[in-house]
Image (cartoon, rainbow, N blue to C red; front, side, top):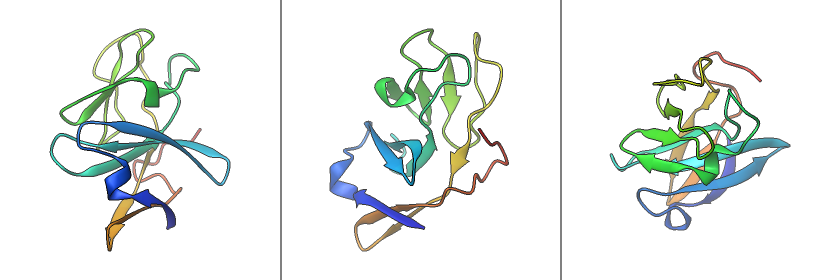
Length: 108
């Protein structure tokens, strides 16, 4: 697990971009109060998901509107048809840690 930032750096309902050992990660504080990490690139077009909107447990790609489930990486609508990698997150002593081994088995 790699320390990314403090939980205070990611207010509820927001997303930040982090570079974790050369891997772009979108770190999300979901509206369910949990923290999620997904690959910071839409599986449909090479744009940053971290620039999108958080809604519930989904993250919307700002370019074409595909939404990705933060728990599974699965898209909920077109134009994206492929899931994005989801990375395990741990919160310890107010800090957020991420593992780069995808929990959903999807690699990029």
